[in-house]
Amino acid sequence: MAAGWEWDETLFSGTAAYYRRGRLPYAPGLADELAEVLHLEGRGRLIDVGCGPGTIALTLAHLFAEVVGVDPDRGMIAEAGRAATERGVAGKTRWVRARAEELPAGLGTFTVATFAQSFHWMDRDRVATTIRDMLRPGGVLVHISDEKSQPRTTEGLPYPAVPYAAMDELVRRHLGPVRRAGRGVLPQGTPGGEALVFARAGFAGPRRHVVPGGQELVRTVDDAVAGVFSMSFSAPHLFGEDRDAFEADLRHLLLGSSPSGRFSERRPGTEVFVWAKGSAEPKPRCGAA
Image (tube, helix red, strand yellow):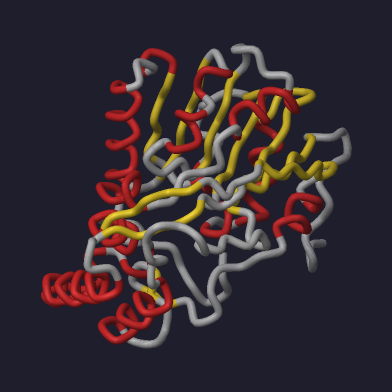
């Protein structure tokens, strides 16, 4: 959690309805990669911490006997439940509205814990130590994110690229130059250095795996608008009475970039770090007695 910033329940308020359409999908083959490297065969329990609308939990549901998703946002939990029903896995999934800091919350022990682009919003040392205690012997923590260094040129594709830089500038024009986050701001963005946090908590590793992306996607204006409204720093409620005007400006910008209303994009690769529970006791935090 960034210094000087406090989580509040409006962080992702109103974004859940846009999330599945707006966010780029993880690389295909992610579930197969994890099944192979973790020897998953439909047994054990998964906890997905900061599960959002169930994106990762549902992708991996067939690899476990039971899946528990935890998220503090009411809308995200509702979307996850609907998606589980649509996919026919409601009977083996459970969705818990809670902050990660409230764990273990009587949820028991798990074979695998996943954090998919969610860990930076938490009290990381506290949550990592708690999750380590919730893992069974031989259990693992899996940290999942987009692969940032992979070039994703749209050269040779049929439509223009999504004008992300211009969209970001439009958000700043409407919301101000400092990144918004719930009721607060994050001038320096969210924290990194996850490896040090996991090591302090007593995890061993990591083993790094990259699931290749690069597959061609066609995105529409509605997809791009949903992408903006799925982000914490441009959540719908932040615009207040200006929301309709912002969306009109956004759609005008997008159609100006691609009169057909279509854009070309490539899926990002997915980066996976696997941390073993290990046998060592957690290392004391800096400054601890």
